[in-house]
Image (cartoon, rainbow over all chains, first blue to last red):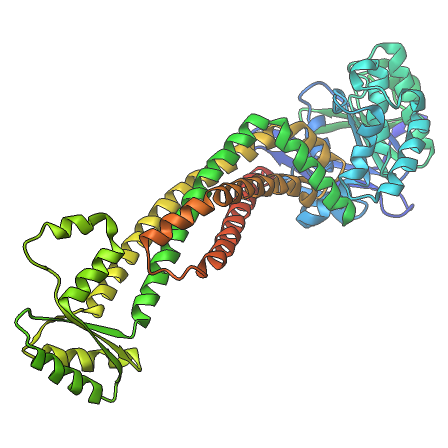
Length: 243
Length: 293
């Protein structure tokens, strides 16, 4: 099963994500990414691994267009993010679900309201909000905790709330930035199981992680970043290189 | 659209009370500015109304020498009545002038009694068909030996115009300074509100909220500060309206009283527009610089 993956997408249409010769240099002269090429077809599940400071977070910021590449092209569903009009940025972000290590939940809102918030602030008509929220809460298994606030939840439940919020727009692409970084191993596995289920529903998943055990056990595609460069891109690989 | 407006209003209301002390301080400083604004406007309206009244005055008043004889008076009366520009001619004798003065100013009547002789001159009060003919009649009267002086309306008008100009200039300068200060306070109040919500704004951006959804709640919050301040100012003005109207009518005792309600409506509209306008502009500027990043 282990083998290199061609950097360019196969025949199955436009890749969800494609980076060509992407370089990101910050104004202080520091290069976070150097000549990165990456193509992720629809339905893929990709682990993004590498030491801290390798450029994983920068890559994710480029994907959600928080920042623009200094050189090269970042294409999401065939659209060049650099050419996106300002008012189209929110639209493309609704097609991306994203979760972080620190969950980013609003502490004074209940689980239900945290999830509903994502719909309210994007102008979803009120009658559509409630059923959509209940549906994703069922998917992540939090229907019973819907009226609790983040402070009353375990870390795993908080991350599942964040996942529910990221799912409520029916994204095509799901980004998880160290989603298990704050969680103990057992809870981490619950979150990974949830991400795998989301992937099975047809959503492309990109997960940045340091969790070697999970990566090695699942034998998915692994993209390794080091010092801003892609140093490996293998299907069915382990966390560490198995040369 | 309804969801958007409802969402924005709800968040604006929450935002106002989340930092109530700051919001109320902004409101209070805006009340101060709007009260000052109303004061300047009311004064300006009053002076202009007086000016219009004076300009529209179609009476020429000519004061006579004390040496003028009754023949002089009769001759002048006939000559004036013959002028086509003149409608009526009233002669007010020295005694009549004193009696009129006593009736108008009863408080100082005793003072006049103690004078050795009557200081008030006799006069002609001449009504004209058209105020434009004022100069013709005034020039004619100035040429007559019996006439001491002709009340110079042009002089009064130009004096009033310069008073109005000075009041307007000082008023505008003070208002601009106070207005900028209030704008600055609003910008900072809203900036604090934005910072307090930076976590929410970050999440909103991540889940794909448009700039409008991020911006308008704060703009509404600024508008709410402006609206509240305008309402308080208008309330204060209504409270002092009656004593103020008395004061004004005794100060400008020629001011036509029916102008008051119209002035009141104009002042209320200007106060409301200025208050809400500054609130909206201030918060728009504040959020804009934040969203630009």
